[in-house]
Amino acid sequence: MVNFVRRKILGKWREGFCFDLHTLSSVFVGYDEFGHARFDTQRSEVGELLYRLKNRGDKTAAPELVKAVGVLMKEWNPPVDILVPIPPSTQRAVQPVSILAEAISQQLGIPMAACIKRTRDIPQLKNVFDLDERSKLLEGLHKADKPVTQGKRI
Image (cartoon, rainbow, N blue to C red; front, side, top):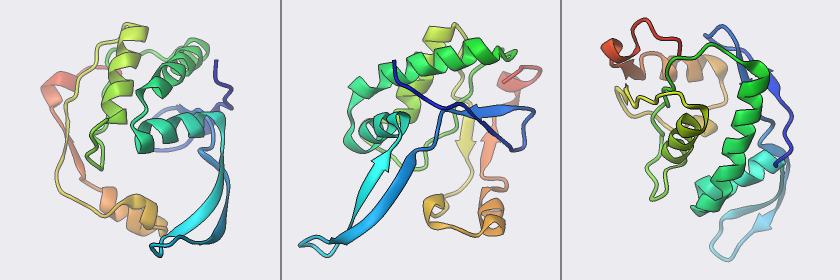
């Protein structure tokens, strides 16, 4: 199974964890023949699997990530009634959010409800470095189907 370092994350929730850092280091190495910046990037094991799934459309990376979620959830054991994935910000032929949410739902035996909708388009947050600006962009960005989530531990 993939090695990961469980990291507590803060936010507008009671408690949350992530599996690891995605990128350990990234060094600019120059431009390719098309003028695109190129980097020598070192990723964590989880980061490499996510990169393969998200950027290469490699569905074979998903099972290891799902196993890791199972390990984390067993250790953490949060009370959860329903799994609610956040809609992806970018449309892809292979949609990592959907693939992982469905597989995690099956593995954990927790129902999944794709009941969150985006209210508008925003620029990719990876290009927004100011925390206040990011917060403003995220404010009101998603709307939940309340009857599906009401009274549920998500």
